[in-house]
Length: 133
Image 1 (cartoon, rainbow, N blue to C red):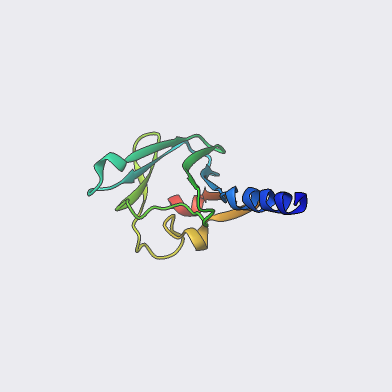
Image 2 (image 1 turned 30 degrees about the vertical axis):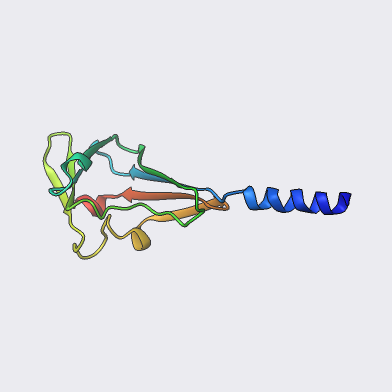
């Protein structure tokens, strides 16, 4: 009887453990300039945001979590475009979802990803001189 109870409690404990996943997405400025990154949405204006990133610094772009344990990655689908500006507010680069070549929208191709533990994801996009030329 004790074995059955112990097995029952073990099964309940395993069943009660909901998988939980987390994701952090950082953007790093590897250039020698201080930059502003503007994420612009004409449809969801409340989602517009600007990140100020000093030279050789990293800032958090997005964080997410899931109680289903599902795979998570950064999402830019709500933004029409992403502008990179210098300290003088000069536009250095405009990314659109269809911009050819290296593109911040290309999460799978141009963002690095690490999974230091199960269901814990860290993404990083590095803004390089190539992005602003």
